[in-house]
Length: 197
Image 1: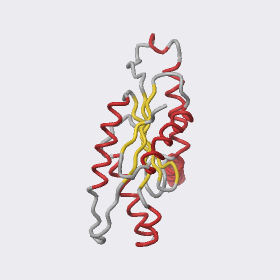
Image 2: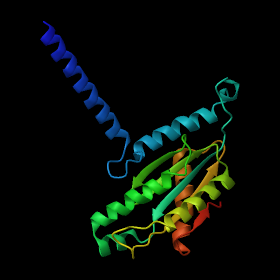
Image 3: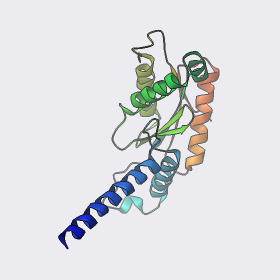
Image 4: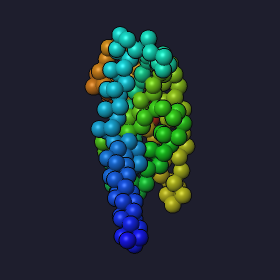
Protein backbone atom coordinates (compact mmCIF):
# COMPACT_ATOMS: atom_id res chain seq x y z
CA UNK A 1 0.00 0.00 0.00
CA UNK A 2 2.80 2.40 0.92
CA UNK A 3 4.64 1.66 -2.31
CA UNK A 4 1.56 2.57 -4.35
CA UNK A 5 1.10 5.79 -2.37
CA UNK A 6 4.76 6.74 -2.91
CA UNK A 7 4.46 5.88 -6.58
CA UNK A 8 1.33 8.02 -6.86
CA UNK A 9 2.98 10.99 -5.10
CA UNK A 10 6.01 10.67 -7.38
CA UNK A 11 3.77 10.64 -10.46
CA UNK A 12 1.85 13.69 -9.20
CA UNK A 13 5.14 15.55 -8.70
CA UNK A 14 6.22 14.62 -12.24
CA UNK A 15 2.91 15.87 -13.68
CA UNK A 16 3.14 19.12 -11.71
CA UNK A 17 6.66 19.66 -13.10
CA UNK A 18 5.38 19.03 -16.63
CA UNK A 19 2.54 21.54 -16.14
CA UNK A 20 5.04 24.11 -14.83
CA UNK A 21 7.27 23.58 -17.90
CA UNK A 22 4.29 23.88 -20.26
CA UNK A 23 3.13 27.11 -18.63
CA UNK A 24 6.66 28.49 -18.84
CA UNK A 25 6.87 27.55 -22.53
CA UNK A 26 3.57 29.31 -23.22
CA UNK A 27 4.70 32.65 -21.84
CA UNK A 28 8.45 32.61 -22.62
CA UNK A 29 10.21 32.72 -25.96
CA UNK A 30 12.50 29.65 -26.04
CA UNK A 31 15.47 31.43 -27.65
CA UNK A 32 15.60 34.68 -25.67
CA UNK A 33 13.63 33.65 -22.53
CA UNK A 34 11.75 36.95 -22.89
CA UNK A 35 7.97 36.89 -22.63
CA UNK A 36 6.00 35.92 -25.75
CA UNK A 37 4.13 38.42 -27.87
CA UNK A 38 0.79 36.86 -26.86
CA UNK A 39 1.62 37.25 -23.17
CA UNK A 40 2.70 40.86 -23.70
CA UNK A 41 -0.49 41.79 -25.59
CA UNK A 42 -2.73 40.20 -22.97
CA UNK A 43 -0.90 41.83 -20.05
CA UNK A 44 -1.09 45.27 -21.69
CA UNK A 45 -4.78 44.89 -22.50
CA UNK A 46 -5.49 44.10 -18.83
CA UNK A 47 -3.44 47.11 -17.69
CA UNK A 48 -5.06 49.49 -20.18
CA UNK A 49 -8.52 48.27 -19.21
CA UNK A 50 -7.63 49.01 -15.59
CA UNK A 51 -6.32 52.54 -16.16
CA UNK A 52 -9.21 53.36 -18.49
CA UNK A 53 -11.79 52.23 -15.93
CA UNK A 54 -13.66 55.17 -14.31
CA UNK A 55 -13.66 53.39 -10.94
CA UNK A 56 -9.96 52.51 -10.81
CA UNK A 57 -8.81 55.58 -8.87
CA UNK A 58 -11.24 54.71 -6.04
CA UNK A 59 -9.58 51.37 -5.33
CA UNK A 60 -7.34 51.13 -2.28
CA UNK A 61 -4.73 49.03 -4.08
CA UNK A 62 -4.42 51.49 -6.98
CA UNK A 63 -0.96 53.08 -7.15
CA UNK A 64 -1.90 55.86 -9.54
CA UNK A 65 0.02 54.60 -12.60
CA UNK A 66 -1.73 56.28 -15.49
CA UNK A 67 1.10 56.59 -17.98
CA UNK A 68 2.44 53.73 -20.01
CA UNK A 69 5.29 53.78 -22.49
CA UNK A 70 6.45 51.30 -25.08
CA UNK A 71 10.01 50.89 -26.29
CA UNK A 72 10.23 49.08 -29.63
CA UNK A 73 13.70 47.70 -30.46
CA UNK A 74 15.22 46.41 -33.68
CA UNK A 75 18.79 45.12 -34.00
CA UNK A 76 20.49 47.13 -36.73
CA UNK A 77 21.63 45.16 -39.78
CA UNK A 78 20.71 41.83 -38.17
CA UNK A 79 20.44 40.10 -41.55
CA UNK A 80 24.02 41.11 -42.26
CA UNK A 81 25.12 39.59 -38.93
CA UNK A 82 23.41 36.31 -39.87
CA UNK A 83 24.89 36.39 -43.38
CA UNK A 84 28.42 37.19 -42.18
CA UNK A 85 28.70 35.08 -39.03
CA UNK A 86 25.94 32.49 -39.44
CA UNK A 87 22.61 31.97 -37.71
CA UNK A 88 24.16 30.41 -34.60
CA UNK A 89 26.02 33.66 -33.94
CA UNK A 90 22.85 35.59 -34.80
CA UNK A 91 21.11 33.62 -32.04
CA UNK A 92 23.89 34.51 -29.60
CA UNK A 93 23.54 38.19 -30.53
CA UNK A 94 19.77 38.04 -30.07
CA UNK A 95 20.14 36.43 -26.64
CA UNK A 96 22.77 38.94 -25.47
CA UNK A 97 20.79 41.91 -26.77
CA UNK A 98 17.67 40.56 -25.03
CA UNK A 99 19.55 40.32 -21.72
CA UNK A 100 20.96 43.83 -22.15
CA UNK A 101 17.48 45.23 -22.82
CA UNK A 102 15.90 43.47 -19.84
CA UNK A 103 18.68 44.14 -17.31
CA UNK A 104 18.07 47.87 -16.58
CA UNK A 105 14.28 47.60 -16.55
CA UNK A 106 12.20 47.52 -13.38
CA UNK A 107 10.54 44.43 -11.95
CA UNK A 108 7.06 45.45 -13.17
CA UNK A 109 8.15 46.22 -16.74
CA UNK A 110 7.57 43.57 -19.38
CA UNK A 111 9.97 42.71 -22.20
CA UNK A 112 8.81 40.53 -25.06
CA UNK A 113 10.20 39.14 -28.28
CA UNK A 114 7.83 40.63 -30.82
CA UNK A 115 9.12 38.70 -33.82
CA UNK A 116 12.43 38.04 -35.54
CA UNK A 117 14.94 40.47 -34.05
CA UNK A 118 12.24 42.88 -32.83
CA UNK A 119 11.75 43.28 -29.09
CA UNK A 120 9.20 45.39 -27.24
CA UNK A 121 9.08 46.60 -23.64
CA UNK A 122 6.29 48.19 -21.63
CA UNK A 123 7.19 50.65 -18.89
CA UNK A 124 4.24 51.03 -16.54
CA UNK A 125 3.92 54.50 -15.05
CA UNK A 126 6.71 55.92 -17.23
CA UNK A 127 6.05 59.14 -19.10
CA UNK A 128 7.68 60.05 -22.41
CA UNK A 129 10.70 61.69 -20.78
CA UNK A 130 11.37 58.72 -18.47
CA UNK A 131 10.94 56.26 -21.32
CA UNK A 132 13.27 58.20 -23.61
CA UNK A 133 15.99 58.28 -20.94
CA UNK A 134 15.64 54.54 -20.39
CA UNK A 135 15.75 53.89 -24.14
CA UNK A 136 18.95 55.92 -24.47
CA UNK A 137 20.50 54.04 -21.53
CA UNK A 138 19.69 50.72 -23.22
CA UNK A 139 20.98 51.95 -26.60
CA UNK A 140 24.34 52.77 -25.00
CA UNK A 141 24.46 49.36 -23.27
CA UNK A 142 23.91 47.56 -26.59
CA UNK A 143 26.57 49.67 -28.28
CA UNK A 144 29.10 48.48 -25.68
CA UNK A 145 28.32 44.77 -26.05
CA UNK A 146 31.30 42.62 -26.95
CA UNK A 147 31.49 39.04 -28.08
CA UNK A 148 34.56 37.16 -26.85
CA UNK A 149 34.84 34.81 -29.85
CA UNK A 150 34.01 37.55 -32.38
CA UNK A 151 35.97 40.67 -31.35
CA UNK A 152 35.17 42.49 -34.60
CA UNK A 153 31.39 42.02 -34.16
CA UNK A 154 29.70 45.28 -33.19
CA UNK A 155 25.98 45.56 -32.55
CA UNK A 156 23.73 48.60 -32.42
CA UNK A 157 20.02 48.99 -31.97
CA UNK A 158 17.30 51.38 -33.10
CA UNK A 159 14.51 52.25 -30.67
CA UNK A 160 11.06 53.78 -31.09
CA UNK A 161 9.32 55.31 -28.07
CA UNK A 162 5.58 55.88 -27.65
CA UNK A 163 3.79 57.03 -24.50
CA UNK A 164 0.19 57.56 -23.50
CA UNK A 165 -2.04 58.15 -20.53
CA UNK A 166 -5.60 57.05 -21.23
CA UNK A 167 -7.67 55.98 -24.17
CA UNK A 168 -5.16 54.24 -26.44
CA UNK A 169 -5.33 50.53 -27.17
CA UNK A 170 -2.35 48.19 -27.13
CA UNK A 171 -2.47 48.06 -30.93
CA UNK A 172 -2.42 51.86 -31.23
CA UNK A 173 0.55 52.17 -28.88
CA UNK A 174 2.45 49.44 -30.72
CA UNK A 175 1.74 51.19 -34.02
CA UNK A 176 3.07 54.48 -32.68
CA UNK A 177 6.21 52.85 -31.27
CA UNK A 178 6.71 51.01 -34.56
CA UNK A 179 6.40 54.27 -36.53
CA UNK A 180 9.03 55.88 -34.29
CA UNK A 181 11.27 52.80 -34.73
CA UNK A 182 10.92 53.04 -38.50
CA UNK A 183 11.96 56.69 -38.32
CA UNK A 184 15.02 55.76 -36.24
CA UNK A 185 16.06 53.18 -38.84
CA UNK A 186 15.28 55.47 -41.76
CA UNK A 187 17.37 58.33 -40.34
CA UNK A 188 20.60 56.50 -39.62
CA UNK A 189 19.97 53.75 -37.03
CA UNK A 190 21.60 53.39 -33.60
CA UNK A 191 19.30 56.05 -32.20
CA UNK A 192 16.17 56.68 -30.15
CA UNK A 193 13.20 58.36 -31.80
CA UNK A 194 10.04 59.44 -29.97
CA UNK A 195 6.69 59.15 -31.72
CA UNK A 196 5.40 62.50 -32.93
CA UNK A 197 1.82 62.78 -34.18
